[in-house]
Each structure stands twice: as C-alpha cells, then as structure tokens.
Figure 1 (cartoon, protein in one colour):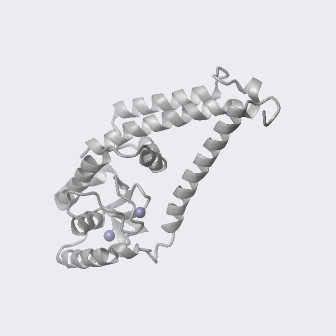
Figure 2 (cartoon, rainbow, N blue to C red):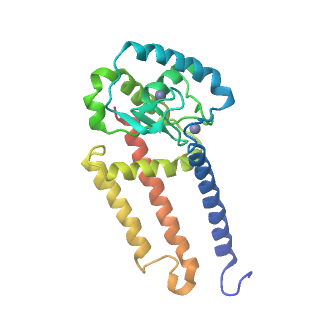
Figure 3 (cartoon, rainbow, N blue to C red):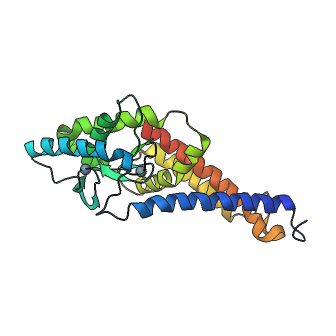
Length: 251
Ligand SMILES: [Zn+2]
Ligand SMILES: [Zn+2]
C-alpha cells in the first residue's frame, strides 16, 4: 500500500481519472482561448486559400441581395466573411462561423461527400451546432432555407457516423453546453427529449447526494467520491448520446 488505509487500485483510478480530466480541460480551454482573438482570426495555414476564395464568392453574392438584420449576432465575428455573424454556427471544435459561410466553405474546400476540416484549427468537423433559435430559423426559411437544409444535411451525414470513442468524449463539453442551453430555452427540444434528459440529470444528482453508494464517503473519505463521479460521467455521456441523436435527426 502506498498510502495507509487506502487501496492501491483506488489511488490508481483517481490518478488516471485526474490526468484524463485535466487533459480534456486543457484541450477545451485551448480552443476557447484561440477564439478570443476575434479581430485577428487565426486561420490555419492550410485553409487560407479556400477561405479567401469562399470569401470572394460570398461577397459577390451578398452585394446582390439585401441582408436580413435578423439572425445577425454582433458578438460573434465570422472569420470567413470578417463581418458580424449571420445565423452563427458553432463547430464541435468550438469555432464560430455564419451558417452561410461554413456551408459555402464546405462545398468549396472538399466535395460535399466528405467531412470538412475546420478553417481555424483543421480538426474534423462532426457537427454544426446552431447558435440561433428554431423560431428564427422558421421565420427566415424563405430567404435562407437552402443554407438551413445544408446544415441539417451535414449533421445527418457526419454526426451519426461511427468514430473513435475518444472523439466522442472530446465532443462532450461542447455538446453538453449546447444541450443545457436548449434545455433552459423555450424553443429547441421537444417535451419528450426534455423529460428524458431531465430525468437522467436528476438521477445523477440524486446518486451524487445520496448516502447510498458503491464506495461510501463515510468509510473512504474523498475516495468515496470516485464512484459518484463515475456515475455522473456515465450519465453525462449517455445524455450527450441522446442529444447527438437529436442533432443528427432534426431539420
Ligand atoms: Zn461569415
Ligand atoms: Zn476549429
């Protein structure tokens, strides 16, 4: 025994869990820090050509039609068109673009049969998560219908594709954030999804608080929390799986 009174396996599990969580946090933070420099969008070297060509095409298209003000988000600057984001989309790597821009970029940078790489960090884009409401989408369907359809199309084709387990785990922080956003907003999730997700979050919460445990805190102190964290972790993964299904199925 390394520490008196505590089993070595418990120490090992804690260490592994600790390293893993630190790694995920680091990865997540790195991405959000990179997006802070809004005025200086750090495009990846390999994407610069594609982005420039997409931008040129977008500028020509936009000059020809009146821009709708709705859906515009002044807090987000799109690194492709360099303007306020129109119907902003967030990728699974945490980068934000206009819906229109990212769809154009997708069709330009690769054939639409393939997943695209993020113009900022070159990570594979598995989901395009919308940062606008369903209501806004419905109201603007006649103007931007084609773009919305392409976003849904992308998620349907690539969101549900089998991937590495690690890949799924990387996506959890961002999926969970979007899930919570939708859970507490009035549009978005249907009642059935809301009830299911709330139920599992409640279960996690109850297990965490209840004295009934596989490893009770009273006997093992801080190490008694391992099983609680584990149960919460599993439930978060499960809830994200439900949410992922929803994203890949909706229009
Ligand atoms: Zn844009
Ligand atoms: Zn990215």
